[in-house]
Image 1 (cartoon, rainbow, N blue to C red):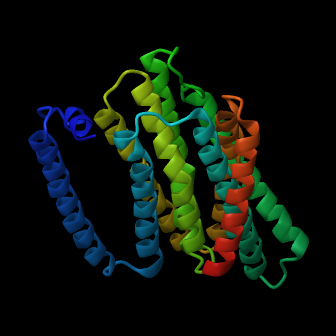
Image 2 (image 1 turned 45 degrees about the horizontal axis):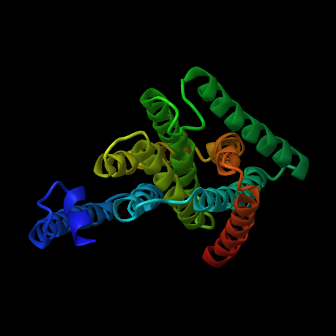
Length: 298
């Protein structure tokens, strides 16, 4: 184990080499901790929803990096485990779409005016959901990418897959930012998306490692792919802060975009290597866990 840690960090194949590698990680972690502390202290100067959006986006990005950590210490992640983790992430996102986005969107639509009937609110939410899904469909058509990288595909296909994951982090970040404007769902959405990002970060890292890239590079790229979420979270928060009328539209649109990603990307990927039962079990577990979490955090 000591020799493998040393080799992974390009150090001499000895205990001293492993110790230098561990020392480097310790210095890096201390630096990141100091940076995080500095950023956290600056959040106090922001207003409530925007501060929640930044914190939620940062948590989601950190979860993506956390998901890639096992690649540094494990020799192999089985296909069945990948399917189970992706299924869990899909269940979390499905529950978040329903309980943390669509239901609050309906409540916000009704609260916008005394004359707004249940039918009017339902039509607004349905329209917003369709618009969100349509925007993701248009993005999917315009931006080149692949859905199923494996060892037989070219490095270009793998990088397109990584690009697709980064692009599809946009609606997740927007959902965090929009939900930060509603105290009842902001924490739940950020937590749910963060849980979903753990297997997502692992899959990105595995795809790059399978294509022949070093584990350190695969980990770094997987971690960087999550940085789009804080940016999108701030954007979503600013949009709904500028006009409260946009809140139900933003919540419903984010739900539509997340549902599109679940159906178009995550579920097919979880079933790709013929572990449908495990993937479905993970989906049900993730859905129930997120439903309970949404209730507890409300």
